[in-house]
Length: 124
Image (cartoon, rainbow, N blue to C red):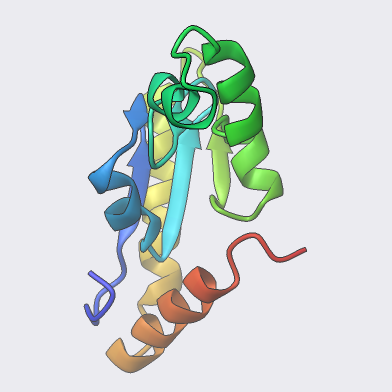
């Protein structure tokens, strides 16, 4: 996906994790529903590796920073979508907005923008 010359727009609607987490992280624009989670590993797996105790799920989830709020603050995602009665319209509007923004860009500009975004994840 990193080499595509078209914009990639990602919406995490539930749980984005494991091998797919890296792939969706390479989007030009990544949004998450406010109650979704996104991580490279489940909290149970993290707890098993770090503490050799999968029952420490709560502590693992807190350390992993996998909530939409945490990931927005870390600049891993670009937008948090409210989960209200207009959820589908909210997603649709955001997708259309991002497509419209990219119409004036060349394929190379889109690819470079994605690369720079990915390189700057987590920088404050």
